[in-house]
Picture 1 (cartoon, rainbow, N blue to C red):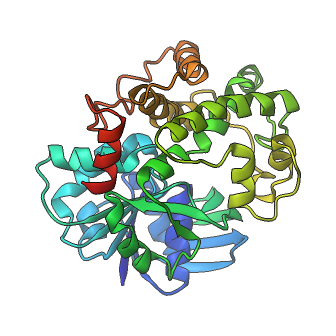
Picture 2 (cartoon, one colour; picture 1 turned 30 degrees about the vertical axis):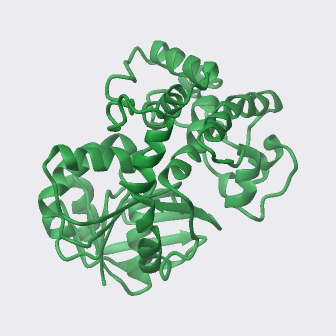
Length: 357
């Protein structure tokens, strides 16, 4: 079986290294010629930390067609902001019956991908799915070497439409048994926990980051910030309830994803989670924790809330404040209902579209 991994960042190198190490024919694509050149020179990926070994990657390339043609599974690990561009670029090379998994989809990644393919006139039969989060907590030590800090015990996965989920899981679980079936991409999308954690932690530490003072992103959590995160998250839970989904709150999700995490409060669990222990703060506020998590996480949750008549004042405030802080319009290319192909649909029509079409 050939598996293509699109995106050679932290997740892409970790996944391609692991799949190659356990014996799959794997191709790894990235647009960055310098990065691909470094990886080609090494011939594969060294994994250290929670996984140990070397995965010899069969194809390392900047040629998208070379990576995806003939692949049974295509795993897309790029930043969520790139999902639409990836869909446009990959559309000419996709083949009937290929499985495409966004890992992760963030919020509504599969919807963005499907809508973009439609706009391109794409009409082949593929299986499109999204994972709720990345399997690994990992960081590149250098290109060709990835530190696997943690491995999630359970990761929700759903296809679009939901009726395709069983087929996708049948193919992917032999290599990743942590993937668990859930009812629809509404759940994987609304279970975007990163969109709850990342902007809050970064915003309340913005001045520290701008002073170039390094801190531990999760381990230095405080009780008051953790309490705010739970209030922020309550709005996500309310949106889920409006769509008939009982979502996991942030405190419970940590134990779901990382079973060995100790502590009762959210603050304790964030401080004690071994997978979070060595993750440092970013070096700039212009980072994916805002630039990605706001337009592809917070914004679409807020938009789904509007369609269901749910007020989300804290989510909306986060978008407004971060736009002012960064002096960037995070809405223009963000995941609005229009960009998701859901403009003009009410709550029931959105559910029907996601589950059945």
